Image 1 (cartoon, each protein chain N blue to C red):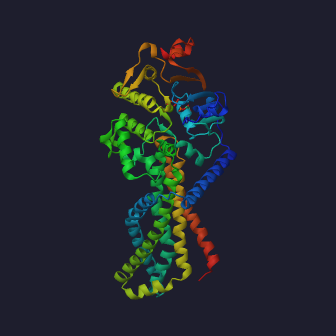
Image 2: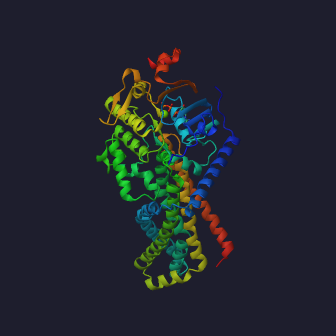
Length: 262
Length: 282
Ligand SMILES: Nc1ncnc2c1ncn2[C@@H]1O[C@H](COP(=O)(O)OP(=O)(O)OP(=O)(O)O)[C@@H](O)[C@H]1O
Ligand SMILES: [Mg+2]
């Protein structure tokens, strides 16, 4: 038998085909939003699963991230005698960056993996084929509701995470650093300008799209039994997490250019 | 008033030819990587007929059923279902054809997040315009057909393999499709349960005149189907008297090496001198 050698051309072709498949899946899933039937029931069920299911971890991560931000920056700010800037610092970091990214990564861990394993097992047990045989488009019934539920829920989860971060920062600055709580909130609030809030709210929409489309893509293209489902799940989490961080950089940069520095 | 004369298409007209058949395969070939699974398969399934598909494991029986539903596309050749050429159809066009075709998958493929009732009702619920009371009624009827009325609220994971198979049959027949595709409906089941399932398939064939392709590993099942008919009075299958055997619309198709080795009725199969067939049916 011939020895199978690694061929860069084959590899590149595979990757390009995969990206093309992914783009088609994402495109069709979005297009379905404007076609009947809408599967509102399935969308609500997913929203419940993603939104309320992720609430505890989002609250916890948000709170402690804000708290640790306050602890760390207190050391630096204290040296310059400007401890009162803590509110601003926590607020800007949470709203612009850490709220969206951390919430996105948490929801990736919970739901991108869930989607990949659920759809993957449906593929290997022929449930997807059965669905097509019964006259239902699996992309419309399974992918579209997950995509939109994730985008909408991640948006609200991010807002909750931002708030929890501010509460965590307030907790540290009043109880541990002895700062005035009212002062903290005023500075945290006043420092935010339009571009911060806009950046912070556009990110979860993009990340939600990444999480659901990557999770569903790896699930739908799972091959090779239970082992394949396991592999799809891991790959989905890794791909979505990395993609979130990479896209985060470019979106941040792009919005700085578009909206200007403030 | 005299009845209007219906234009009866002559037997050789193209329309009669395509309308008369439930499924037609013409020189169909498909390969997975280097593995040429089907290599020029042609056969016809007439309306109302049941054809049993045989072949060793991996000979491509399930692949034929998936091709007939358009779940896969052949590399070459043409496939038509209920008079429509499905070879180049898009998924959206295929959904229209699939409304008339039911399939029972080899491993049942029940949706495990839905209970038995929702599984059986899936197709009706997806049509979005059937009243809930009607759905309930028809689900009960379909489950009665397979004698599983009591499992309505159970989940697939709570059922035995044979029960799952029968739920899958109920899901396949609920809309009374014109064509049914059964993939190994009796595989791995005890003789009592498989006889029950064979009886259901005979009932479907004789009472509702459904055309069907049935994949099976058990030759005796197909012979039972060739020698029995469904008796409405007793609600059971009955053996046909010797002289009438072969009068039921039952045929056999044997796959070997990606080709059709035999396609004909039970009598011809028993008479065949081909050494492979002799070994297969002995
Ligand atoms: N999606 C697929 N990808 C790759 N190979 C496949 C695929 N589906 C089927 N095959 C191959 O095609 C061949 C026929 O498969 P098929 O499932 O049709 O067999 P079968 O006759 O139904 O067997 P069994 O009696 O065991 O059910 C097998 O060798 C299988 O490996
Ligand atoms: Mg098979």
